[in-house]
Length: 104
Image 1 (cartoon, rainbow, N blue to C red):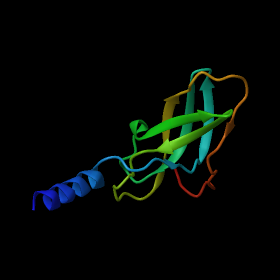
Image 2: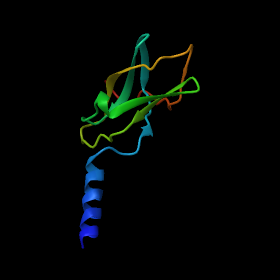
Image 3: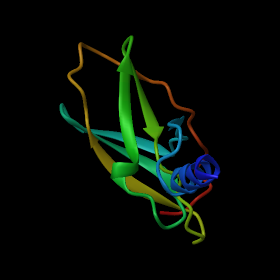
């Protein structure tokens, strides 16, 4: 009985906590300076910069979303600013680029 309760508790915690990181579709990107980058991403009201991280490997930067936006507002574009890792020369983005069908 205890094991079943623990399993249900773990499933409940997982539903509210962070999910498996996924590549995020990017609606726009701006390199602000050598240490910061701004992305335009889709939000339904609860998206925060803390929900994301950057992965840098083989001169590719990837924007990963760790927490799903489960709010129910009409989708819109949200700007998030993240710190860049130390880069060695030019880099490319490894995320899908989305069409501008959402408003800021």
